[in-house]
Image 1: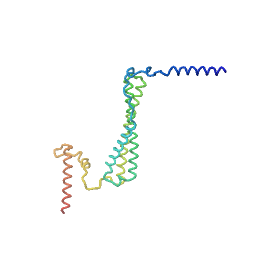
Image 2: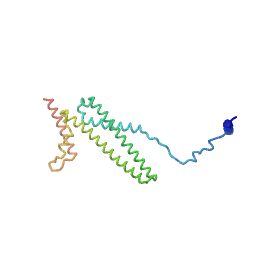
Image 3: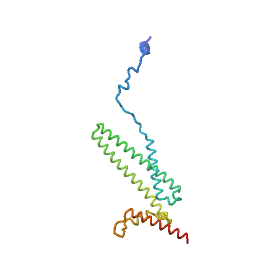
Image 4: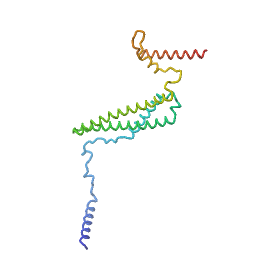
Length: 216
């Protein structure tokens, strides 16, 4: 038998001996119990899918209400395939921006907790300040997106000749704009209550005019 074979047999014999002596070995007696461990608290797994879903819903609500604001009186235009496709695309873009803003805020809170736990290095404070700046940029970007969406639908109405609502109904918002800076007989600025009364009176007069026309 060669030297290498002898060494292999020796190692095999030692391994068999260890195996035979360890048949009744209880590993649990050598492990720490729950009482031996510090209170680590519950481990929470962040639900990113939930944030994505809520961002999508919030975005759809914003875009839907915006389109209703500018195109609710033009049903055919509101239901046009291009408008529907644009709403869907804009909603996706806005949802992504909302999600990124939420993730930046989540990251910011994590950084603040690190500082609270004693990480007061200059680098840590630099990172916190950078994140604050990013949060401001996110807010600015979201506001800019909404403004662009509003501008598109305002311009669309104007370009297609729907700048004014083409019906005979009273437009309360238009009355408010016309009377916003008006004064009453005593020279006082017309307040909201008086504006509401004027709008109500205008609507009553409009109804009376319609009734008179029907009688004729």
